[in-house]
Image 1 (cartoon, rainbow, N blue to C red):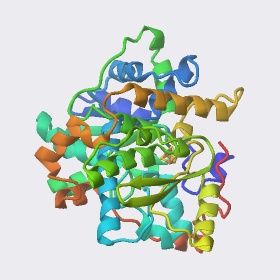
Image 2: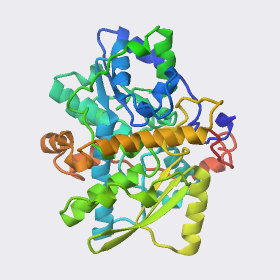
Image 3: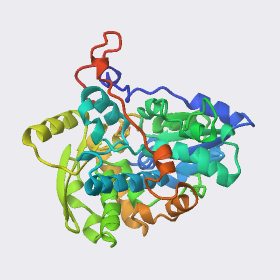
Length: 408
Ligand code: SF4
């Protein structure tokens, strides 16, 4: 049913684990796996654990047991996305180079929805690539250089809650590393596997989940802040970006209320807040689900209300509710999603590093590779453009469904 209602096919799985196994078996290949924030709050459910069990260490151990050469954290790139996206927001506000409000762009479901159904909004979408987009480009350049690896040998695999990422990594602009190295045909990310695909693979290999001892990420692109962690749930991207924007604009650390932005937390499909940053009063909103996005856009236009920044995620509750996450039809899906959201907020609150721009690995990647946020190299590698695809609505043979509602 889901496959028939989602225009980006974001809730249909096409299992790519066979290609990953093949790469692992090939001695010429170096398999680098990067893991998205929401997977660690849900993978345990596949092995009988309660929703909301935080299983980061076991997840990393599992990937090592399956043969990954390096395990990196896409939360590192979530921090990178925040630094670029917050810098872009400040530039829009101070230099007025692009229109406000700025909309987030890390969800390929939302991006593709805007390209088809709301192309007039494309100048409003942040040009920052998603964390997976940034991770892939950085793995095959910076990481390869620092580790002395041949980027042509690297197979970059992302473990995500998201089936739409299978579409995103194949967008034609996702080959920044190929341009950087002057190598044709290299993609920044080669394969995407979902939480459920990983669990199926592990079970087929007979791996004993309970016996796995926690393992840590590899360094260089394996450290993240609490802001990167909450990227996995609705409202998390906005809260993370505001923490960094506050410090960039005022020169002072984000106050306590910005480390727990209550009006933006919760499970309603649309939430709004006014946030004071120095002399600026920012009007922000958080939306999930494309039906909510559609009505939010309509209301924004009709009311003329001015917003500065809007987060949109396609799935219910954000990525923790992604199409590749475990599903237990015997249990209440909303309660499961709330438990996963709570797990990510608990993790953020338990960390001492809560802001993306203070992540020492982020400081290092700018110091030794990208220079500074929005630098020429950062724009080339970490930013992208979007296409008006509304003609798909008029093409008979490729017509997307008119009513888009996510039913998972
Ligand atoms: Fe993917 Fe859903 Fe997250 Fe969007 S909200 S990035 S479609 S899992």
